[in-house]
Length: 485
Image (cartoon, rainbow, N blue to C red; front, side):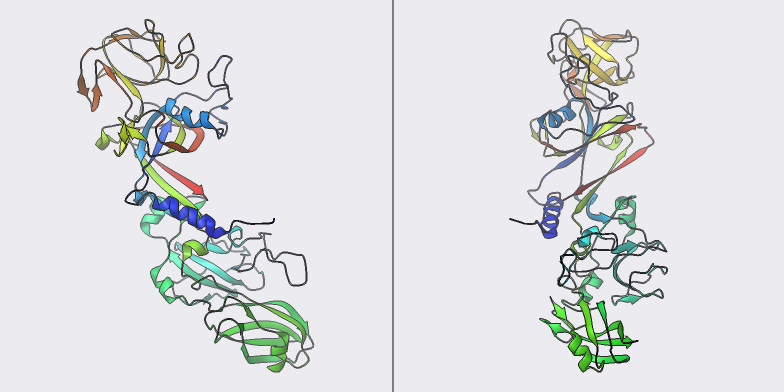
């Protein structure tokens, strides 16, 4: 049973995901950062047995339940993704002189008449949205290519924002779609992707079923030379008219003189051209190019294949305006997308959440070092230092499922507790206080503070391992996640 899921289904899914950020009863999404410790091949006896690669070549996470639990173990912080941080996106294709661009066609992948050969783009694509039929110019305008002058190279960059079809001096025909705003350029323009949006002026001017381009499929032979006018475009629309130029007995050009309306299919036959004056023409075949629903420019998101959703999140230093939850004392190697996590047993809503645990120490001797192992001999608890705040004597740490990192000698993940000495691998020691207090926006109960994001709450939708990213108080990391549906 041959079957397909159409691109409309992909667009539908991207719309549902994008709407989840702004609906009244929608989802709450957080970007998580973590993995301060280096990637390494798992060792014998490790509770996590898979190889994660190295810092220079981290491996792709597995898609299983384990992989969805592990990110919470070494998560450092999470930041809420606002509706304004999300947009539909499409691949970025900069206009470059000398490039032969694909044209918009409604029938890529269909079998050509009388053959078993599929209609493809210049690059061999069998679907519209796999073809390179739109460009971004230096003026940050986006144009759709309607005609490429018989598959020749583009040498004139399209310009202008008129709602009519633009013909450049190199014979290309372009349709202006929209201009990237300053905000879209700043937040949603990456090396590979760009925001897509519908220009209201262009959309209002679009005409459903208007024919702008007719291609020559077979030039025929024996026709009377000249330009033959007044040829009706037949189909389920109305009002479409074209003219055909014959030179050397061949059809050499077709011009749409009246676009008409309402076409979902159209034809211009050899017999019509003969009747218009191309006496004795035979074998000519033309392709009437059908526009998308509503006409070119009606809905840029659907027309250009906006089944990508881009999320743009900036991590600004420690986010001091948000309780300083994002430490700059350590690097990170993992990015996650978390749906509907909890904080303190209730749905999370804060802009930022600290994901590390913390201990307020007293009587400290020495200095704890980031990434070193910490232990509590009396309980068997084991952890890994994320940050040591020597000013306030606060030790931030994680407990993973790695032997020698978060698992005690008996293979259990034991919590640090009581007024038992916490020792660093480098020799530092300290005793947890017994006080209940708030220090530097961190609330402690008997010297301990849990992470602000509840472990294993919500759903991990995305995991990315990457090379280490070093943070700094005067630095902003801009992270763009692009999800393809």
